[in-house]
Length: 186
Image (cartoon, helix red, strand yellow):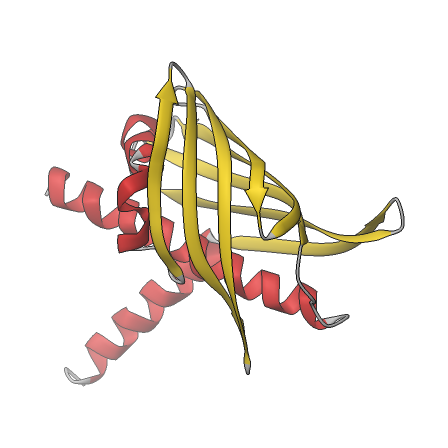
């Protein structure tokens, strides 16, 4: 019976993580072009200021975001940050390198708007929203995006591929925030 306890606790922790993370990806048509619309959300115990620090420490993102090999700030001017990212889109046997330069417009502790400047996407825009959860002191994190890859994505597999990438990214972000907050509060 004692040996079963850790496995049960682990299973409950994994189930809790899945309950905390929701990801929806839709393929839409815009001006005759195939685009993907992403809505993802999850909750953490950390307050918005802690979440904000993790999300805006751009230079460290590649330490915990899967398939992101580098992330560096090219310039910062007030609440506007120009960021260069390099990574990999992966699905089954397909691997495609991705290079982006984006503009992040920060609204401290509540939102980050990201717009494509150049790179391997025909269209890329995203937004991070942070919502305090008064009952727990935690934060609800909502990520939304519209993207159009600048490379071939096979038909219906695109939705599955992008959902997998977003789930891995969001799970890693939530886990990083949770572990950093646990380290500081414990």
